[in-house]
Length: 109
Image (tube, rainbow, N blue to C red; front, side, top):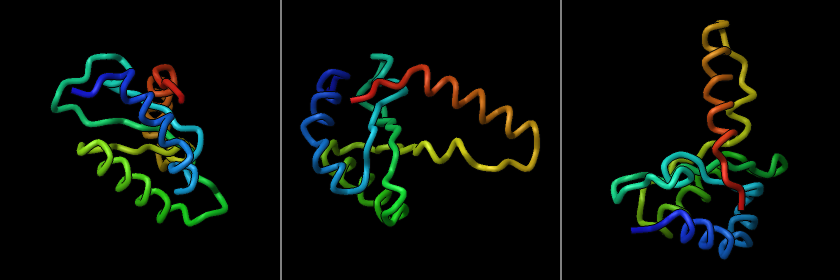
C-alpha cells in the first residue's frame, strides 16, 4: 500500500510534470495526510492551477495524470473552490468550516 511518505516523495518527483500541466502549490489532505489511509482510500489533493491557462483542461489533465500514476481515484480540490459565492449564509458558513479543516491538515510538497 502507498504510504504518506511515498506519496509525498512521488509528488515531489513529479512536480515538474505537474507544473507543466498547470498545477502549482500542491498538497495532500485527508486520510493520506493523517496517516490513516487504507488500500481503498482515495487520494485527496489540494492545488492551485495557473489562472492564465485553461483551468478546466489543466484540472482534467492533472486528475488523469495522477489517477494513472497511482492507479487510484484522486479527488482534486482547487483553492478557487473556496472563493465561490454562496446563495445562503448557511452554505457560506459550511464552506468556511470545511475550508478551515482542510487547510489545517494540508501537507504541501
